[in-house]
Length: 248
Ligand code: NAD
Image (tube, rainbow, N blue to C red; front, side):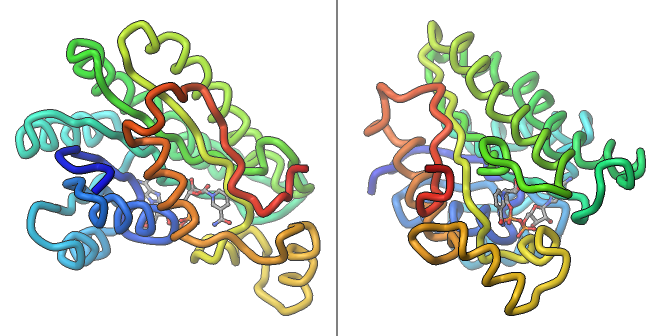
């Protein structure tokens, strides 16, 4: 029970890595609020986790909805100990000039602006309490970008710089901020990165991962649990690869 007594918001918790993180947090004793655009998915995940956990539909790119998430979490939990900024999207693989403006704006609103919106709502309370852990889901795309995903890659590079900037600014208040850089993972988003899900494209992606497999929601749950627990009380500003050696 490494997170016993802690409360956590996990964005994008209805699917993929967010679901893996939510399951691990609940198993380790945290109370979890699943925030997702997918109302039914958020409710189903909260049901699966059981009593003490709850689901909430929100678009993390909209300021009023993020304000409502934080107000609701504080109403239900009292205080929020952990925030996981996990919700993220990509444009399909294509030449950088072929991504249209609307798609570009959507990727940056969900992947980047949401982190600012949550910081604006939640950081003041964490600073007052002199406690808190924030975890951002970036990507190996930030460190070792693949072609044809340029603006997605750049949004994840933004995430890693934001993580370090937030970490250094919030350190005097006892608030830690870290990131995970997952390699391609077995989630619904994988097909979007690959363009199409064929054995050949899977083999191409796998050939760049020294440990020879895709990452999993359980891998992210385990890494997230460590970084958000008191075991990592001296760890901040770290962007940790969970990538089977992809970035070596
Ligand atoms: P996923 O598509 O399985 O899950 C993402 C969840 O976020 C979904 O439940 C979706 O409904 C929700 N979501 C999307 N937009 C939202 C919004 N505006 N507001 C609220 N919720 C929203 O994706 P995943 O693979 O689990 O990805 C999770 C994170 O990990 C993302 O930030 C992604 O960029 C990152 N990542 C994924 C991979 C991978 O290969 N899967 C690799 C590296 C990094």
